[in-house]
Length: 118
Image (cartoon, rainbow, N blue to C red):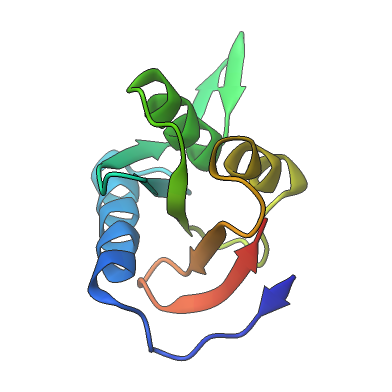
């Protein structure tokens, strides 16, 4: 489900967008992502583009959360020029976060473009 959002984000959702945006800018890559687990911990990642390990930023962030012991996700954020979240990215968030976990999609300037739920 895709819905347009206004600037009515809470501080924790703004934080994960800011973290994703910062990682993207710091590493000079097209995509940054961040997820927040059930305890409020955040995991930040960028796209991994190795010949033997191609991972989107969001799938990398989910993998980092799982490796860090997270058992659930409260929310995820992607900062990209993309206009939608891929099915594979949504599936990764759903695998750890469960159905209904929000994925915030923001543009490179950090402006929220849409929210997708898994």
